[in-house]
Length: 258
Image 1 (cartoon, one colour):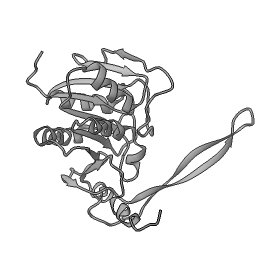
Image 2 (cartoon, helix red, strand yellow; image 1 turned 120 degrees about the vertical axis):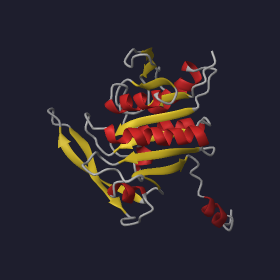
Image 3 (cartoon, helix red, strand yellow; image 1 turned 45 degrees about the horizontal axis):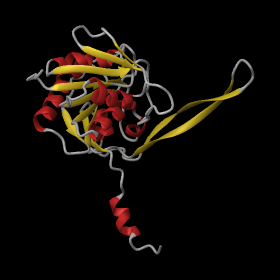
């Protein structure tokens, strides 16, 4: 049956019971018809993994009153695939939104992020898509200050669309006493994680490793980056694309001898 409202597919990587996705669902209800397909357990750091070696489980859940919602045993990318091709079948979403993630997804983290993988999967399918993240890892994080911006950014995408193959990576500063200064369109910060592996022993004396480390920002002080925006209490919006081709390098390689 035709609906005049935009059709919005919601997913995430923290799992369908997270506070972040509940906040996102509530805001998206103000903009259109919402359908949720999200992981049944946390899938953080999964990147763009898909499930190919074992069955995928999909179950309807009444977790959001009045909303058609499904929990999936797979990854965030699996959720968007199942959402588009099975749950919605012949209906194409007007918008895919992912999040709101508990924790930032800036800089190089976009490659590891399950939140952004759901948004990128939407872009692969030709659907305008956004990944939302809050710089607060707490399970009871305060999302109240981001609601107006989530609605505003999603409304803009619904009204204006996005270029083919592009998804937005949106990050919010943690709630503080200071009012957010607004939105900044940024480039992805040039940075990386300097990993450390803590070698430990389990109760049986067998070795295992625990990953930790620190983020290294090679663009410190650069005002056009996502990290600078967040440090200065702005909402950062980075347009991302899944085409990883290094076009300038292609030109250089034409001079190689093969």
